[in-house]
Image 1 (cartoon, rainbow, N blue to C red):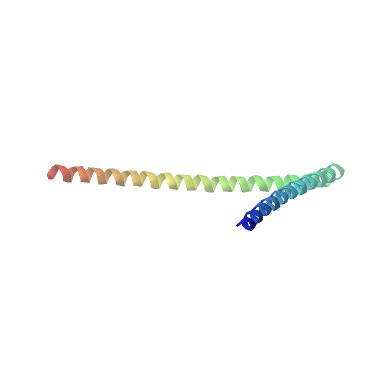
Image 2: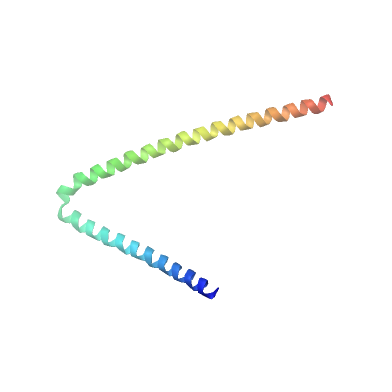
Length: 98
């Protein structure tokens, strides 16, 4: 039992190191990218502009899909409310007959 607890603790430490290394790798990549951008700003600007443009296109496509999904969910909810109201009215009508 004690051994299992120690293994869990070691796994948690490994996770912490993993995220720390990812963070440091991101910082290093950002620093290298900044230096490259400063040295080659004339050649990287069109590439960066194109990359950002495609990123904006992707964001817009995702936003459209989310909006469509939201509308579909609202339609389903409205239909469910309508069905529930009809069931309540039918139950009330049957209760009045009895």
